[in-house]
Length: 289
Image (cartoon, rainbow, N blue to C red):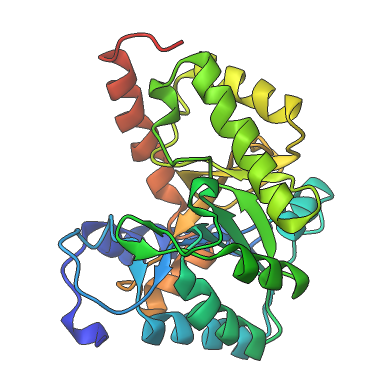
């Protein structure tokens, strides 16, 4: 995909010509916070989704991202490794965690071979309800099978839970919420033959709903999770809740300049308007559980 054909993006303009230069002036581009990249499907194809909300990354663009990280000497790690570095204050300028939501087949066929070429690892957050002996699909895209998941696990890829059925967790009753957290973990552990400890929140993370997030956090702890990630934008630091670490969304429209800016903190500014927007939605929404 040619970067010359990219659409006009207000977030890109604000990042490259305002936020990123300010980050450099304030000497905060040393990356003492951890970028956790959030990918979904690595595949070609057109999408009606806007550039900001796109979740697909073409193999060409993903290969560019991996090559750029590799050439710069970055260490590409799983979310578990990254979360441990954050907790122990061991984040370095060359540490980048990579995650893939939903558990698509194209991680196995396309993304993982590219990561292997530079010795990188990653975390796949699997929608557990799609696991079975036969290949299932989610959102019209083929998912990983149990045998492929086991092979990836043996080769060092971390596997985490992305719930059982990928619902809007905040809309569920307490019992159904617990089932999504508990049963997804059990299915993946039964598939792999060992415990898993990571969780990825689906859809927009309702950080303004403190009551709901407190309930979810207790459930994650109860069922043996040790950390997790969400869709709040930004790099992860010691001040972030280890069960809801922020991530940086990445897709086909991230040209090299924007990709670098995101890694170095230039995209973190978007967390503030994201919080304001969520706060306004929370104010006009009826109370959850």
